[in-house]
Length: 377
Image (tube, rainbow, N blue to C red; front, side, top):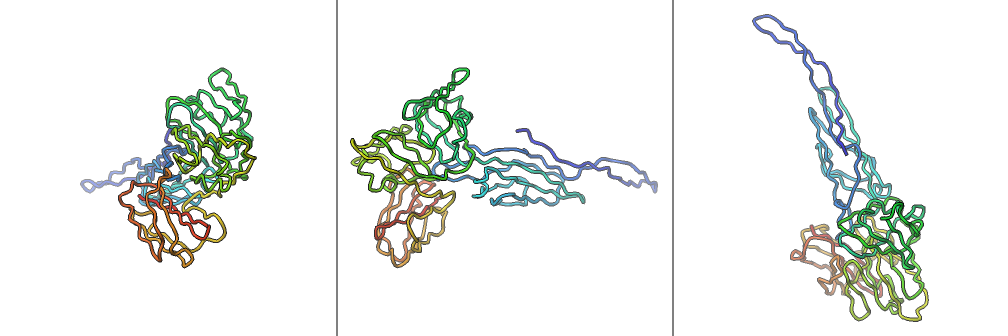
C-alpha cells in the first residue's frame, strides 16, 4: 500500500534587517506533515500461533514539523504510547469482532492541526499453512453464505486440491476453477498445499452454533473455538468410542493407549475414526475466549489468582479453600506436561527454564476443573 502524505503549506513573511535597512522577502514554510498508509490489514506475521493471540501492530507513520502528536482508536484497543509518531497498537476484543478499526493521528504545530486516518482490517481468524503436502483445516467463522473459492482466494496459488470427507472437491488450477463444494461449511476440510508458507485471513462473525455432529465411523473433525481444546475434555464419555485421531499436518496420531498429542488446535481439522458400531453423538466446543484468560467451563469458578501474568517465568498462584490440596498440571502449547503437583494456599511456580510462550495450568478438584493461561515473555 502506497503511503499518503497529509500536509498544509502556508506563506510566511520573514523580516531581515541589514545596515539599518529592512528587506522584506517571502519564503515557503510547512505546517505538520503526516505520512502513513491509509489502509492496511493484519496477516499471519501479527498472530502468535503458539499462544493464539494477536501481537501488537507496528504503525508505520512519519510526522514532521509537529510539537504534539496524539493517536486515538475507534475501537477498544490500546497504544503503547499514543504521543509518538509510530506506536504499537494492541488489538481489542471489539476490534476483532468488528473485523476493523480506524486509527487516527493528530499532529499540531505552528498554530496548525491536521489529522490522518489508518483503516486497519482485522480478520477474525488466520490459518497458517506452513508445510507442503496434505493438511486438515477448518474455521470457527460463519462463512455459510460464501463460495469456497472466495474464502480460499488468498491462498489459491498454494493449493492443489481441497476436499471434504465425501471426497467432493474444489480444484483451483483449471480455468475456470472447478468448485463442487459449493459454499463454505462448518466442517473439516483436507487440502494439499505447495510452496509454503501461506496465510488465509477469514473475516466475518463467529459461529453461533459451536456443536459438531459426529455421524459415522469416519469424519474430518473441525475445531469450533479460538484456542486449543483438550481431546479428552471435548469428547467426555464419548472418548471410549474413539479409535484414532490423526493430525495430517504434523503426522501425529492420538489413540486411547498412545496419545501423540493432547490438544485440538483452531484452524486445523483432524481425521477421526470411531470404533465400529459407534452411535452418533454431538461435540460441544467451549465458548470463545478471544483474550486471556481462558473462560472456565462449568458453573462458578472458585477464586484462583495468578500473578504476575504475563511474567518472565515465575508465577504465584493463590487458591480458595475449596481447591486446596488438589492435583494440578502445567502443559505447554503442544500439549506436553512440564509440571505437576498438589496445590496449597499459595503455589510458587518457577518456569524460567522453559521457552517463552503460552502454557496451561490445569487444576482438578471434586470432579471439576479450572484452566488458566500462563504467558512467559
